[in-house]
Image (tube, rainbow, N blue to C red):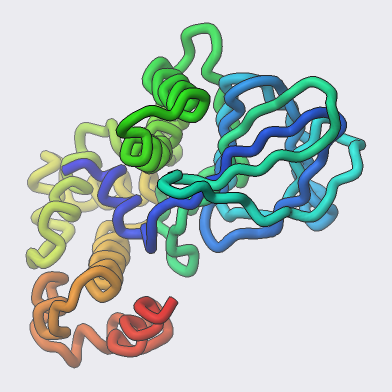
Length: 311
């Protein structure tokens, strides 16, 4: 079971949106907050990412060709050729017939910077902890042989955007969609092993990783701490301590979280009856499921489904 893919799949509420942005110095663009996670890929040139005044704990970030930035909560910010360049409000992007993304040109007649900017539509009300515990800003440099798979994805994107050809309309959205997995994989690979917690360690731990995989593979099974501990080859107490230390919550709390996220995805993406959703997430009755779901999401399953489809 690929836990990273499953975690992201449980949060996705739509396809990514993206804009090819070309700026010539001097240029500055103010980007509003988005409902999801934002991202920027510097394809050519250099620029600065400048947090807005409501995020004084974040410092301006210098970016150059090959850099990838992931903004966990989609905060408002400024992109500019220099940190002090005045920024104008976001402009409507332009879409050409058959193009998979919008284009935007801004600035004067100085040096050019080319970026791919956009956002992933992710459920932010109850994020999976693997995503929710990421830094607010993930900055990955792909130069000098670092993160070769992410580097390859960035290079492929750049080539398709610089020289669109037959098939580009299908290739570019797929690359953008895959980029999120490459970003998170690269970030996890940079995290040092630790006994004090963290998903990078949990996903590699010989006791915790199989338990997580089992919970994701079959959330409806009647799991207990004892059955998970036996799979891990540890005592109940030792397994519970290790799972809690690495994942950040006890095994049964995580199971409930995963069951609810699975249910929310089924409600958003399928027409399955509530009795089916309840059975697939380990609840013996629609009533018990509805009660648990309302406790987790603050609304009844039917109302959640209607709101998700109206969005």
